[in-house]
Length: 270
Image 1 (cartoon, rainbow, N blue to C red):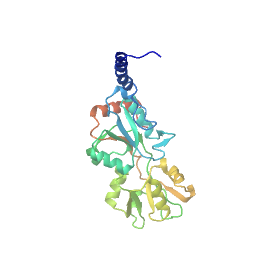
Image 2 (cartoon, one colour):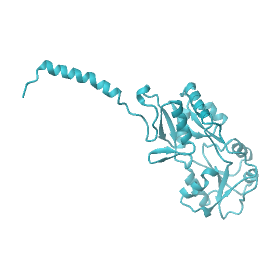
Image 3 (cartoon, rainbow, N blue to C red):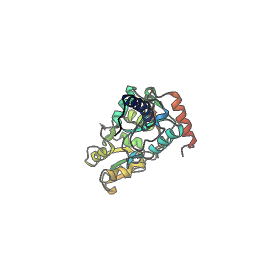
């Protein structure tokens, strides 16, 4: 075996040192959970990717085989990709999402939230990415006090019935206004929609408001049969609320403008 001289070893080490940084710089991984693929990290500074927060809420947003999909997840991802804004998906409970947006310590965006004046003071909104169908109520099928076709105002004014609402959530300007003015009997909870439906079934409250898009899926996900519940529709319920991407103030106005332009390219909401 031939001997390697000390100068030769030094030369070899010097070559390796010069090669390693090049290899590392060209192999930076894309941040985020599966399904959050976007612009390669090599094209941006470390930490530039925006955290796009979601929580499991079929059919709006949910992870399937490691990919986040749904009625609001799909247009949100398309907007970020079309705008060339690096991002990664992050599953975060809704209460935690509200805390994050209030803290305003990072570049964070929430998907599919309603817009109101209070929230506009806290963060920045893109153009809408989805519009709900008119809101409905879910109640036990054997509760004859609730019937379809009436006015939601009459329902909220009925002191014999108990409304179940989620803490920190907006039900849209129309319903939020009526709930504030009529002050119906209600229970406020922090649990998810599935657990809320179980509370209705157990008789702890009488009805809750949901978008019709998720009503049947919610019943099935909670493990109930469709016959266990009735969907209450209202004669005076306006078109459903629009849903937006809601970002912290750390997200630059220029990024919001790019996202808005990408959303416009998809055409107006139906």
